[in-house]
Length: 164
Length: 102
Image (cartoon, rainbow over all chains, first blue to last red; front, side):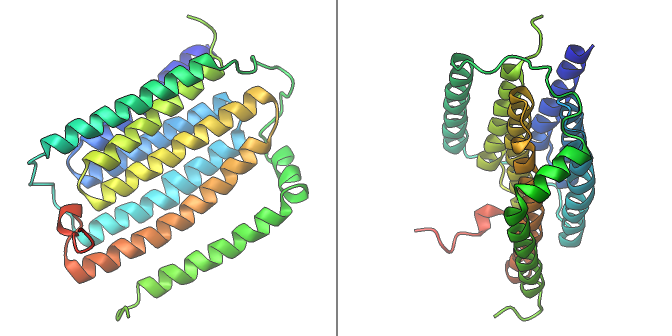
């Protein structure tokens, strides 16, 4: 059952990822990104990362995508009219990405990875993750809060009217 | 069908990363390029969560938690940059932004 769910969710994620690139309207791309992220949250649940699945839906599919849609509608982007695709760029891009896929797949298949472990059944819940976060990773957590503050100040400064 | 192992997840993650890279290379709209960047970040997240699960350790998931936070901050700043750029140039196409081109 879990295997079928894995195939369904990963197919959905990859399909929506492809449709992000293929759809011309930026709003459609954003919607497909939401679908892709939501199905990736399903993959997280299959990996017992329950808290991260919730955070993925809340932060990515919620906050980040609302921000994206807000900017798309603010800028009032039309459907891309100019579709004269640079043939040289397309061919070289496809070639480069194909080589990268080949390198990654051969490396991944050639490496021996740990087999499926059945040790931690309750892993990835809020409690073990929070314990680890506030004991071992407390310093990075605090640094991250400073980073968020810096990003907030930066975003406010950038959206000022007269940008110097 | 063989049981789903770490390889399956890693290959899905690699394919998703390449899709994002392809989008960054092929598309000409700044916002769509930005979305494809998010897709690449998500592919890395998937690989980290998969390896964290199959190793039986939670450190990878903490890493993903940090990455999600950094990505949210990055989106806020990046979209503010795009809006500022649009105000100045009235365009969101990379073909029109060539003042740094040699």
